[in-house]
Image (tube, rainbow, N blue to C red; front, top):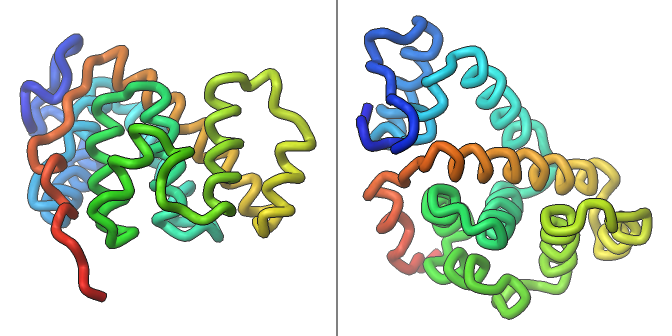
Amino acid sequence: MDDDAMRRFPVPDLDDLPEDLRERIEEETERAGFTPNVFAGFAYKPSHWRAFFDYHDALVDDTTLERHEVEMIIVAVSGVNHCYYCNVAHGALLRIYAKDPLLADQLVANYRTADIPEKHKTMLDVAVKLTEKPVEVGEDDLQKLRDAGFSEEEVWDIGAVTSFFNLSNRMAMFADMRPNEEFHTLGREPHDD
């Protein structure tokens, strides 16, 4: 694991971690070809690591949203929050899942001018409102999502993903987590399919 994964807290050695964390980190490293620094950073406190990744996995595995829609929310919210780690890491995931080398950069800069359908602009309007002005989110916002074509479960998931990644952004910034260099170039090649 990279000692520079975060700058404000020590990054633990992989060999010093509980077995369940080591196994999951090794699986992720094998799958990705590198250890995403968020795995190394959150390993500072194993009980929090488990809770964080259990909830993360539930959000991306148990949703009726498309994976690229989940990543769109994460990137738009992270852009508003100026979270360097998530802008870069989830920008890469969005490029891969959406098969679009430009979309993540558009969403980070200003999702309102991105080349996305109105349905997704509505989704991101609500996600950004929940991020910037949570006290102002009301039934009318949920109705806008329903009117845009999102199911009740999808409306819930939009709120859950937004809320979780606001937490993630804040912890990444608090600990000064740094994105892996590999994330900067992933998914930048155009896809023909």
